[in-house]
Amino acid sequence: MKRRKFISKTRWIDPQDFRDLRVYSGLDRKQAAKALDVTPRTIQNWETGGSRIPCMAYRMLRILLGQALPGAAWEGWTVRGDALFSPTGRKFDVTWLNYNEGVFAQARLWRQMYASTGCIKTAQTVIPFPDRRQPPAEAAKPLEAQPKRIGGTR
Image (cartoon, rainbow, N blue to C red; front, top):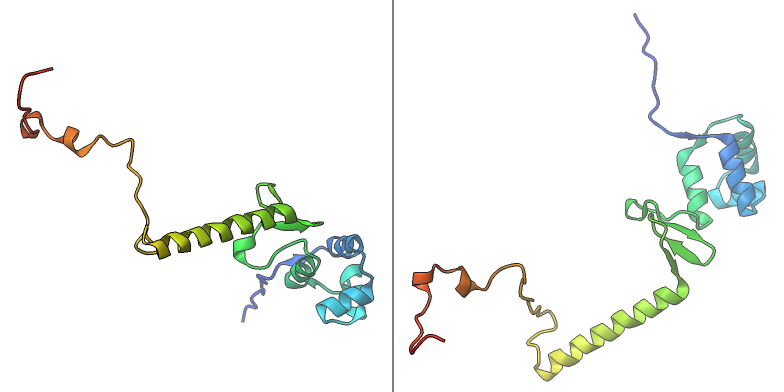
């Protein structure tokens, strides 16, 4: 009987990368162990190469330190200091986020105000904008289908 070699699909982290992340964050082994709900001995084994580091432990440490955000929707977004950075590198600081929250709140209030005065039937009404790339419907008709002018030509 031929033995099959087991191939793990689990990603493992380099011990030096894990140690660098822990040291960069200012945590000692005991603090990192408490944050990840493992023993300090486990952290020591991971950093010295005595046992493999699960990818989820590394990711969780990054999330707990604010260097990564959880979930697929936040892939590539990071938190550095007091700012949120998009995958393209755009910075969103607290002042900018507070300002935009205020703008959106004001827009909601205006929408409610207009809905209550009867200017708009409901707050969900969307007024379509004309598509400037399309010619007017009348110009799209053949010449004989267009209404004839009464009177002379101009």
